[in-house]
Image (cartoon, rainbow, N blue to C red; front, side):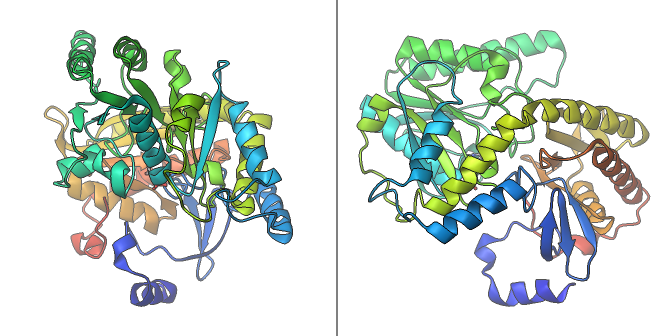
Length: 435
Ligand SMILES: Cc1ncc(COP(=O)(O)O)c(C=O)c1O
């Protein structure tokens, strides 16, 4: 185990651990991290998506250095700075439709979603929120209390929380139609009570197992929200800003949500998130979230550099192309490995589901943790998600090259082979709790 990792264990609280292997790195560049000792690791997690532009992106580094040197202000609570206002204006310009909107600027996806929930409750006078099974919206407060993964794990839900299964379409087509109708029917039943303030949905749900819903899901939600006077919030904290092959993930279904939340990629590695709210919804919740350093000039400068890089380089197009290459490569790998039950994704959010039996899809939970560990040993970082912890999750930086995609596929192929042939001992993962 690296010395730096040992020091981490002795000094950093485990309350923040989400560890899959002993990762200890001293620098990074693009999709690569460098370990203590110099070994290079190809990071296909992008730190759960937070390094969406890769590490040490030159535009982010320059913007942050300049803003830190000028430090026009450190709290949007007290007043305006050019960076804060510019960030909000530039983000608003990227949203379709002429709606009058305002940007809550936050530190993490968690507080952006909490802002959305509080504002929706205040604006509608309704208390309930509807979310989906397997969803992840945050690790604290209201956002945690509406998250399917926590609620199914025993956490006390937000009062009145309505939960409906996320449509899981990996079945024959006829079933998908009835599945979608069933899910939307349940949504209808909940919304018709008239007390649901907002539906919060991930356009692709990652932590629940990297599930791409059937076409028409978001459009169906849009129609029902309109009918029942309920706000629709797209939580694009993980999959927004180009990852799915369009600038906004909601574009895939041709709808526009009332509320959009963003994070991770948005900060270029710094803590930055956003909840874009209709102006009248925002106005109902004035002063309801007060975190002192929100909107500081350094993080918002990083956000402006991220937005301009994504738009200038049209990185969503790159994500679409690389995603197809990844899926094709991984599907070829799947043919060689009985462990692989499914390969799925949209753009650069990809899941590889491991099973002990392809017919029953029985989850290969242990083998998944071993494969992720072995990939780390072979120089590639991935993690795993899903209710049975059996889906290898790939959310690489959008700046990956074709050659890096091919290298990653080769390494995952080798890691799967090593696990299938029993070369990775179980005790290798004993210290890593994972997801
Ligand atoms: C869809 C989604 N929403 C919200 C969050 C919470 O973001 P953060 O961890 O930055 O608070 C996450 C984090 O994984 C997420 O995947």
